[in-house]
Amino acid sequence: MSAPAPPLLAAEGVTRRLPEGVTLVSDVTLAVGRGEFVAVTGPSGSGKSSLLYLLGLLDRPSEGRILLEGRDTAGLDGEALAALRLARIGFVFQFHFLLPEFSALDNVLVPMRRLGRLPLVEARRRALALLEALGMREAAGKLPEQLSGGMRQRAAIARALANDPALLLADEPTGNLDTRNAAAVFDIFAGLAAEGRTVIVVTHDLALAGRARRRVHLVDGRVVSDGPP
Ligand SMILES: Nc1ncnc2c1ncn2[C@@H]1O[C@H](COP(=O)(O)OP(=O)(O)OP(=O)(O)O)[C@@H](O)[C@H]1O
Ligand SMILES: [Mg+2]
Image 1 (cartoon, rainbow, N blue to C red):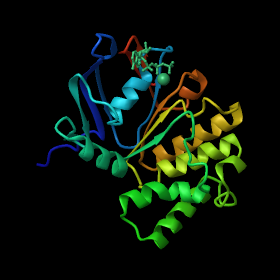
Image 2 (cartoon, rainbow, N blue to C red):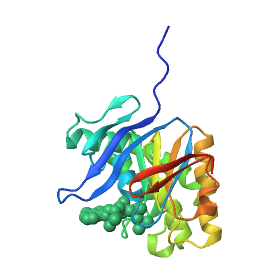
Image 3 (tube, rainbow, N blue to C red):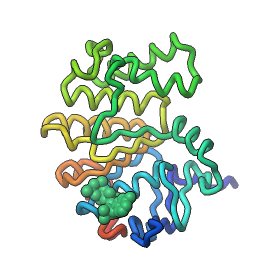
Image 4 (cartoon, protein in one colour):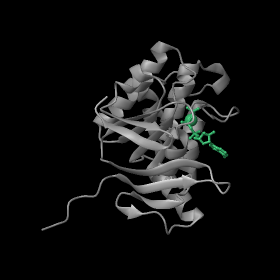
């Protein structure tokens, strides 16, 4: 008999403490499956961003461990972590962080060029398809400054999806958007999860969090509830 597939992402007893003794995340245990859409909520300063950085392998736990696709990441050095992030994890932040001198298309190509898996012709085709799927076909050649806030964020989502990540992490991705654009971004995330991608979104907006299938609520760095919103 084969062993059951491991969860896509698992945090086991993860604590993150700063050298000066401040605890950002405290004993978090969490398993997230393929295709799950999870909202992480909690008051300001509750550790949402800190937890997301840990889950995204941008930071390391002081105690406990993070497993991605069943693989313990604790023993990986910085270079191996960066390679794993590039290939398996997409990030979206409150600020789009698009390169201002690059078109939307060229921004989406950046992670593809870094990974170097696809020949340029195919990479361009994929980047255009991603932008088109997000309603950005006409905007592919435009610079970020020529795009609306909602379009910039969609370009940032397309870039996050460039290398076909198993896991998409977003930290307050709708923090700068109006209600309509914010709802559109959550619809995109729900669609990505329905396609089998795992999506974890930090938001303080409880109405938006209600669109996720599962809500993890943090207080003082601890998970105080975890279940349907
Ligand atoms: N580098 C740091 N040095 C000191 N304290 C920090 C540092 N980073 C975070 N903190 C503190 O750790 C706690 C958790 O911060 P974090 O940014 O993860 O919270 P958050 O839930 O994302 O908050 P927000 O909703 O405001 O974004 C906060 O009290 C914050 O002030
Ligand atoms: Mg935060």
